[in-house]
Length: 108
Image (cartoon, rainbow, N blue to C red):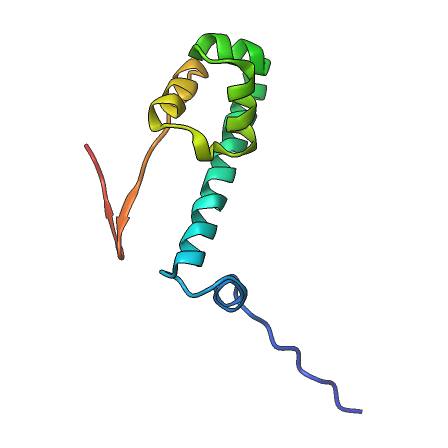
């Protein structure tokens, strides 16, 4: 009996097929949402590591608990200023990378 070979796909191929090609509006929106979701999870993880409640972190940052909750569920509505304040309150370093095509821009 002959076994059938299973075709495998990379994550990039699956995204191209089901979300859209890289550079399309739909794909860009998906990647942005994913990045904001990851950022929110990082904020929550850092807050929990510091053993702070959302309310306590909010007081340190100068925002309401509800704003911290929104940030943790998805950082979409947050300004860069607020995100920087949150990480400063958490005593956490944050690094940004800017990539132009295949080249990373590094700030000294």
